[in-house]
Length: 44
Image (cartoon, rainbow, N blue to C red; front, side, top):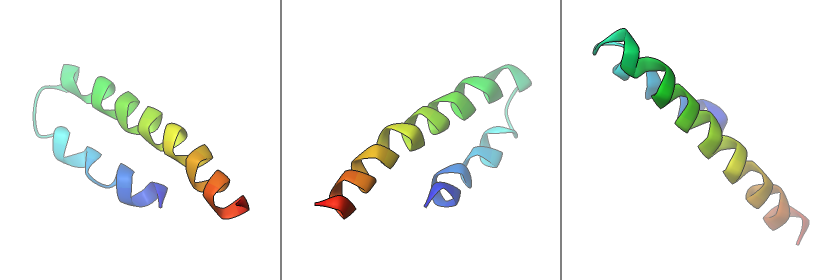
């Protein structure tokens, strides 16, 4: 599941190097925010 969200990040590397870390952080935050929701759904 995480790979699906992290896969689009290499596309941002085409742009300037400065725009690379923020997009990577946003994707990581998104994954870490979604992961507890998924685990909660599987537990229910």
